[in-house]
Length: 392
Ligand SMILES: [Fe+2]
Image (cartoon, rainbow, N blue to C red):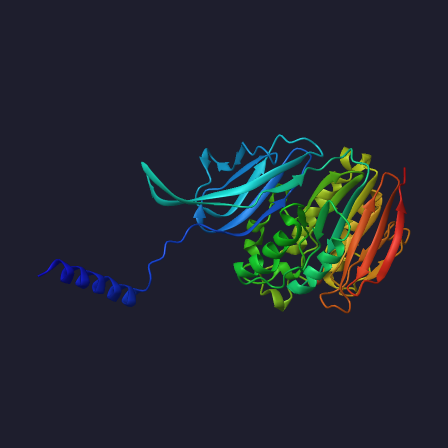
């Protein structure tokens, strides 16, 4: 057989195989969400991101000119190497310092005891973040609640809120509805937030009752980097000591809708125990302002079991601790409740619902002397505006 015939047969065979099994593809690891910033402190920042396949996770950081510092995550002496959800905390930072960073993941093709073969590397764009700073005189934060997966409305709210700079974002519950899949968390929360702000500005997650529903609710925490891996926590920034509580479900644990799988009464007891010591802490007592966030407001949201249980367990402590402002959602009806001595000795602002007609975002601008609070409806109208003066 002539050489040219052999070559023709070989080419035809290869073409036939390609037609049979399709064009071969070599997929490289990809970052599918993030990076997004979590759990900020004065000296650390947690960077999270997701990849499409298991890979290593590394954060390169420093300045725009020099990203030669590296942060990794390891457990029990082993560097995390088989992850799709990456969580790396950078320690040793300065208060109020601005740093540049990028997320880096490398795929592991062969993972044998004595031989690891690395594959492609994915790198994010370089972003900047700024650590928290208790000495900062002015800070601004925004609050969104009850988006209920209406991503377009959330984007519009964030675009409107972004006309002025802000330091922090609180997602005050029911951003998602009942949780069934990872795709919901990625597409309705992590991706849109990362694209708009969360690669540069951290978000603090406040769990809503809907985020406690569905078979994937127990996995939600894996995608968040809240302090101590809890849904209740506190931290300081500028003149504010923030306290986040998880108000849990709105109905009694024995309600048919929960199929015998809820234990929120005992959980809210645990939070009460934590709150008892929290209000006695030096950070709580010495702050210029104490701002509390819960998804379900303790007042102004009917007489459901969740509301009443939170009220009974926490409200006396919030009064005792001289809380200055409480921010909530849940009702889907925006409202400002003036302080009622003996019940809530502080104003409560309740953000609106998912739909354009009643959706809102809340902005708080804090100085050492006052909190200036505004609530803006989706049509741009300001539907809540008041100031809280420093008590001391
Ligand atoms: Fe809710």
